[in-house]
Image (cartoon, rainbow, N blue to C red; front, side, top):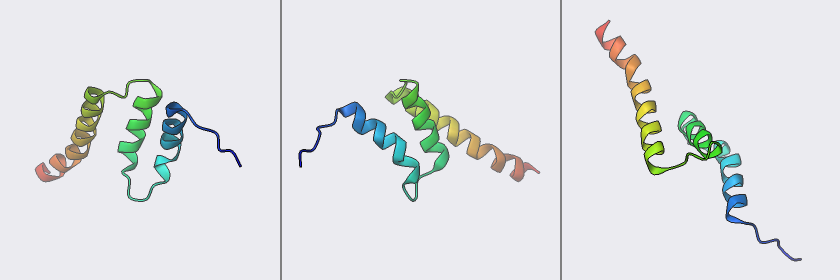
Length: 68
């Protein structure tokens, strides 16, 4: 049997297609990474900004509950 050698893009496409099926991953984080990848915006700075946004979204409800 001869295995086809896959390109790096094919491997990465498969990775992002399957990453939501990995147990223990944070769904919102994974969705944001998939979004950045599909928009060809998967850069260090965009990842850092996206993670900071998700962090702020997570903290907002806690701040409101603590003030209420």
